[in-house]
Length: 280
Ligand code: GLP
Image (cartoon, rainbow, N blue to C red):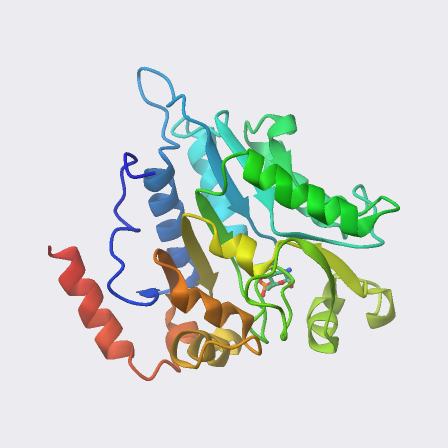
């Protein structure tokens, strides 16, 4: 990845780099711009780079703005995913891929059908099978066979989960079957008929899988994420806040809107540091 142009993921001075934007729209635009530059997604006169790009993708409401930006830039003929391979973080168990509540459906509707990913290059954990642990293991192997993830996009759950790595997840876990917490099921009940219909398990990339990504871009917006972001960035590294493991990543950036950044105790310092780094 060293040879790819980069403006976002250039310094490892901080445990995690904090970038604050004015609004969720600005977060989406900044995430799109920086990921396009970093991954070399732009179509150039001589065609795209031949080196395949491996993207880790996320579901949830937060990355939707980023996906809209990518779609817009693709339609404008500026970028292409022809050369990209994708691995999604997670999928519910007991929800068929063509079910509107599945993450397969979510990705199809919100990104894949609008851009030029080759269908065989997009991957989401398979949960419509009889051997879930074997499916999870095969997914981890597939990521490694693809050469590992160049850039992992993340959202964050209100209890600090990334993917479906719920509190208490092993900090070095691989892709596996995970039981969802009551809070996660409540948070996600809005996508189902009722709480009872929310699945109890999912296959998720592990925290170790995520930490193996060469660069990480976590997006969070809204006041309801502010405490979680504070715990993630300024609290101790603990399995009780799984996203706090990112403090150990050498190349992790957290893009926030002002509301999500509002509880950071050292916000002024992060803003100062960011200004200084940009002036180098
Ligand atoms: C789900 C997903 C996570 C996502 C989280 C937050 O639990 N498994 O990957 O980060 O939701 O979603 P939202 O962005 O809607 O707050």
